[in-house]
Each structure stands twice: as C-alpha cells, then as structure tokens.
Amino acid sequence: MSRHRVSDTGGALAYLTDCTLATVCHLAGKKSAPQSELRRQISIAQQGIDWMIRFGVDYSHTRAADVVAMGGSVEAWAEQYRPAATQ
Image 1 (cartoon, rainbow, N blue to C red):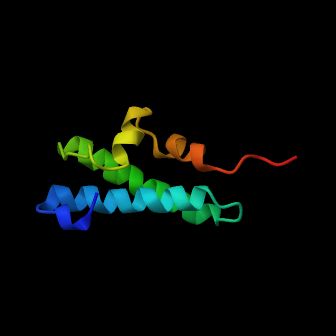
Image 2: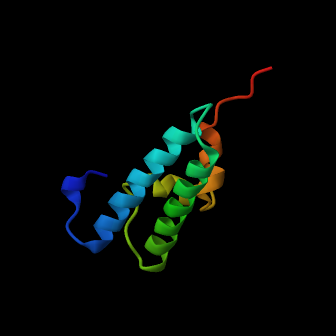
C-alpha cells in the first residue's frame, strides 16, 4: 500500500500496519536481528491486524492480507522469512 492512497483513518491504520509488517519481514530475514525488537514489531503488527479486522478496515492491498490468509498470526507468517539453519 502506498501512503498516497491513504484517504481516511482506516487507510492510515492499514498503511502503518503494512509498514510494520515490512519491518518484521526485514528483521526476520536477518541472522543477527535483535530478537526483542523482532518480537516488539511482531506485536505491533499483530495489534494492527487485529484492529483492522475488528473495525472492518480493508487490508486487501497490504501484507496483512497474506497474514490473514495464513491464519492471522504475524509470528507464524514471519517464520517464512527466517534464514534456514546452517549445519
């Protein structure tokens, strides 16, 4: 979602949640990301998605749609971005 498409409070929530999910994706993909910061960003993104669902905000053009399609858990969604364990 582009910030230029924001025209109401629901769109603002969707945009900020999408940005937070981008941060989650980035942090989850790093081998040395601070786990406390990743957990914090996951929590913020989860709250945003929960609110969008609760208040009927359209999230169809955001990463939140992918999270919801996978069951609604940001933590579970983020797992796909974690680096594979090296042996």
